[in-house]
Amino acid sequence: MIRADIAAPDKEGLDSYDSNTNKLTLTREDLYKFGYSVFEDMTSLERWMHKKNGALAHSRPIDLLNTPAGIEEVQNILGRIAHGVYS
Image (cartoon, rainbow, N blue to C red; front, top):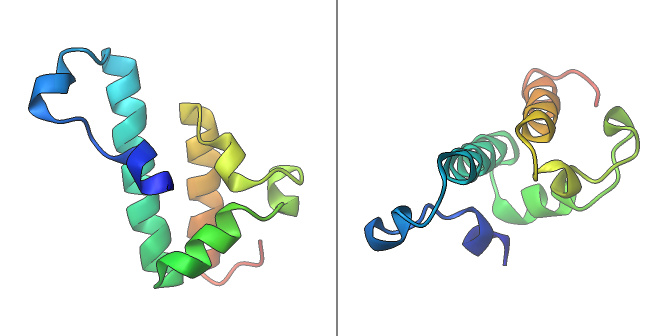
């Protein structure tokens, strides 16, 4: 399940993460929180994350979460959806 991929590390494991990995993990978690607030349920968010999106050059949002730039792109599209802008 994706939630395991985005969970913040526990205190003991924190030292084994470099700062970039930890920052990316926290950013993914923030993205999912924002996405949940937009879609209001996890099932709809997960469906959207796994569906190709024309606003993302026909990529699936889930496939862009491995870089800060990709996360930012997905967050921008979620923001557009939240404001009623077609995406």
